[in-house]
Image (cartoon, rainbow, N blue to C red; front, side):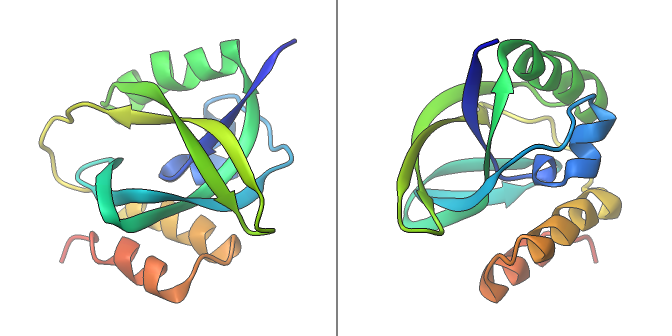
Length: 143
């Protein structure tokens, strides 16, 4: 079955969250995409920003898995509709990898859930994202 390299940057960097959507843990690589910035409110999303980068993971998923995540799970469980775009991911081993990344064109305004931020933070620490980036994620936590 054909698989597509996909870059995750929000709660899907957490394999427990992927498991809730029926996606089993698999091989992955940590990387970043340059010229984008991360926002969270109420869900993680990225936007073009020439002065920033977004950390995440690259893994391979089938078309059916991507449809489950972004056609069902993200809309019904998370409340956001995401669409694929092509990016180049800078991997920790200095290689580059073409991948899909899913971006929401617009998200409904809603309060950020503290457990949502925690799911991202737990995985970001586990994946050894830079300290400054972890602080950036924490900055979105509700006071």
